[in-house]
Image 1 (cartoon, rainbow, N blue to C red):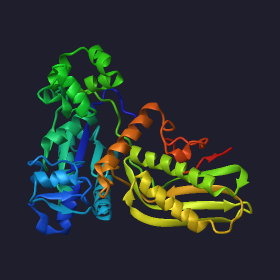
Image 2 (image 1 turned 180 degrees about the vertical axis):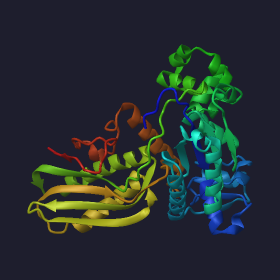
Image 3 (image 1 turned 120 degrees about the horizontal axis):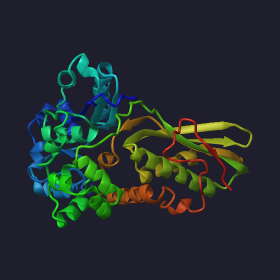
Image 4 (image 1 turned 90 degrees about the vertical axis):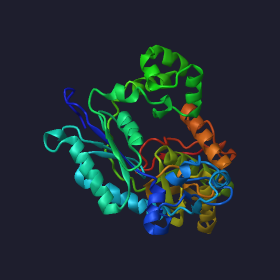
Length: 406
């Protein structure tokens, strides 16, 4: 959306409060008012937790054992991603019917561009009425932040929680942000926060008073971005939401092959790259399929339903099993492929109901290296000798690029 420079932007941010817990309480009313943790397994992690548990220090991504020690009375339930996805789609549909442009940034979070709508409805009035409509029609609590840009609106939502709203008027961005701790700024993680604290920077107002060059010298490009956000500057647009139904990757060989180990290794590389794309786009999948085309052009596919996930180790195992069942003619193969469908919004971390903290930390570390140094810089040993030409995990995958493997 191209906007005239003399039009004041207005962006709303909406965040469903304790989404997994709230949906679970709709299913089981006995959980209302109780300390609830969504997760699973003794070695698993907290996927979500109610406000009743947070006062004991429980938070997401914490090991279940630690959470139980902090809050022994907590009720631990397993996640129901089908129910979460359905409720998220309900909220999405309500928003889609009411506004011209919105972005679903995750399964429970939305940005809405209301620029220019003050001429007709009043942006704040329209946003609060939309929030009330969502609450009434879905039964879910949702918080709202309204301001001139995405960053300030997101912070405003966090300050409004739980189940409330906050309006930061144009021109008040800096004064609203100034008294907040610096870790309220998106992108300021634990390590960055400790570094800034060691420099004597604890409050946003301190960053506002610092030269941008100083933040840049200490934190590089990230420092520049943090300085801008601290000063209420964010020109990132609300990106129009469109539902991507699937993603896939195929490889056609220069020479047909019957080398089973080579074929499996290529499937591993494909799956790793697609899983990285899933996590990068905060999506998960519930069905995977394998495709093979023999030298005589006979083409066969086989698929398998799985719990929602974006984890390599889970999907690779299923992909190999599908290939073993599918490849039964022992003929030369000219093409193999992998496909994920359907896709729904949701971060990699919150879906790992059964995975350990160590596994989550491993994925986060690997993805961080890929973002920094390139997605081919770290992968499983099976992929050492294979490169999928023409495949960029951040390009559209609806028409799968054809690569060649030497």
